[in-house]
Image (cartoon, rainbow, N blue to C red; front, top):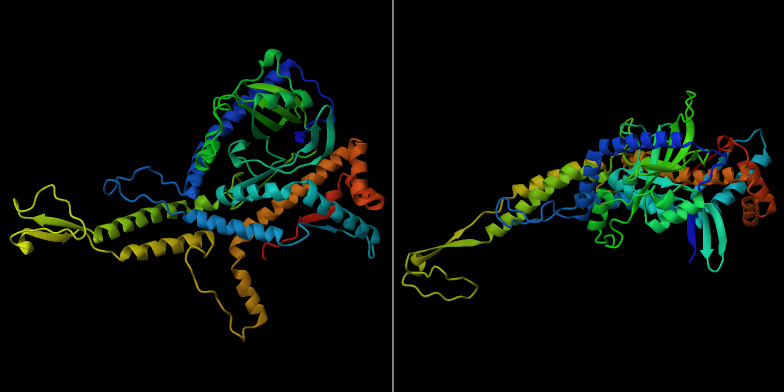
Length: 510
């Protein structure tokens, strides 16, 4: 079976001193621990959101208002997030091509630009369908975006290697991957501009074999007898919550034998000249050692993030589950009270004369009881009454929840119809009004997918500018000599993205 290996290689040589390595290690130790502690409350919220989505009650046993009271979690947030997720996926993949390329003509009747646009469009179409893996990983990114508020794409340059007696490179190219939001680490309080923030880290949990393999390929310094790396005690607690709720827990043999490796892209003044360098560091959080330090291997940080509901001037977004959290908690309590109310309203407790009825007697249907005065010796009393106000309050909560997230699938409604004499413009406005609530969220998803595919083009550009003849031959083999040469010439231009725009074909008003 072929194995996909990330290649992280800087185009500029850099040999840091031990003093520089120690300085960066100390800097990252402080920064990463501070970043993780600053988002502690956010991680608590993510864990709670995941629990609510799975419908697991917050307490194993509910003893209020009575012992062993009904304990059912109403998955209001899951209903809304699943509906929005389905709409988003339908919006993205129902239109082809996935991404549309548009060029800026240099003059009227500019046939050269038109031919270049067509060639690049062909290449992106092939890349989206066959190489980038965006359709597989995109599902998980959109799920994270809708449920937890932030989706993240990571686009490295990889080689696909088949290992038999000799290693054989089957193919190489960019690959879109989804990073769980809890494994994307940024400084506390930072904004969403990934290329401008001081640093961003991607956390990976690797076995020792994987660490050794990456070290050999990407020139990591593991130290003598691997003393630069130390196994982590456990995975992050958000990841643990995912596994427990999904009933697919990490094997016992792997626990305590994983290494917490963080790839960090940072701006740092390594030579004390007052100007920050763009650096790339591989950091073991447990041992607090830098395993590799080099200039940034990519011209742009290979990470694209998008959010469901923007929090102004902050990196992490607000997801549907967190929006629905207060309503789900309130509705769950009221629903359980209603179940208890129905149970009590249909139950009776019995009053009997002392000495006439045995104290240990159990009643059941069709049981015959003999007594001198049946109407007086055994009397039934109702334990409760049905309160219709519970239904009314629950409907009010659902309506508020619908208004919060903009979905109307929480309660069934008859489909709206337009009159036969409704003007066309009015009808169009009424139909589009339904989707306006989702415009910012869907626009973020559209931009994230388009940016991920643009990152794929950047990876090709970096390889071509470094003189990789195999990549140029690969492009010509896919598109033919003429269109392949056009794409190569386009990508060799540093500012090609300023002359050609790329956006997801699907419209957020669809």
